[in-house]
Image (tube, rainbow, N blue to C red; front, side):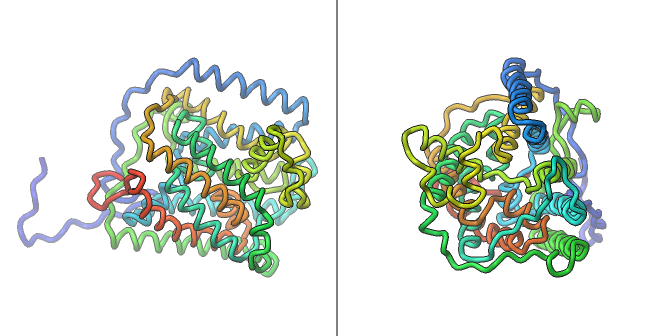
Length: 430
């Protein structure tokens, strides 16, 4: 039992906190609970297709697609073990001022920017790939799309990467989010003529003006400013702490079956994402595959997506005409879901969740549709537009992030309509 200090006694000194430590109370890690047993059946169901699909892709389409699938599997494992989230990080920041998740973003963004500058600046690529920055136009589509996407992820409960790894780990409600996501992305591609001429300015890439070293230096400086501002906000609002997730003791066991610190997840995702750039020449993305999958389904049902203006664009036409398992983004997306399923089964946490409240189900589908439309309008999601854009030194990535914060605020206002809660300052743990 602790006793209160005498009246008038000076307050104890504030303990400094680290980059990912939101408060002194969270620096003590609770004891790790016993690990649940490995889910052998889900593990077999996930691991066997992972091996078989990798072998097929490698033999049918070559080493490059095979490596991309392996990178996707690794991304799924890293996303699951670190529970690296974008949706919850923005929710915590806007709702209660906790910037822990946002500071994890800065580590991911800064590390990815460093690797991108090295690869793109030196022209280093594998399989003949020429790495190129990811940059989008600055205009109405970017602003409207990022706002819609952020509203959607707060209703759907996950962002683009979060949707994939949550589906892989057996979260049934997020399957509805994924279905809505694919529907929205396909609708936006179908109706491309309605929004393709929205006012926009040409992309702005810092490296075109100050070189790759200058671009990297500016990006790192702004990210450090974001860390400082998030700390000031957090100190002023004094949010409830986010305690570390209890996990397995021992590095080897934790790596395979336990929870990873956010910093480890950020570094792993940065390296694997840079691997996608190294192998394919393009940044890691997610949502273009959703438009492809939905359009393939439309074609299978007798429609003619090849006649849509979206699929007549240079590059898009080859994507629709080619096999899905040769598409870069489809390979990494499929890999993420399977990798997360393997990791969840090994961790003993894979389980299908039943009995979804109807309002949650509606929010999941609606959120997915909004994210699909928003991603097409903005030229990408939290990975393809936000992460890849900022790491490439593109102004579009910063604009996407700023308006996604605004959309998050709107999304938090809408969540209670669907029976979804928001963090509150009085919560013991968010």
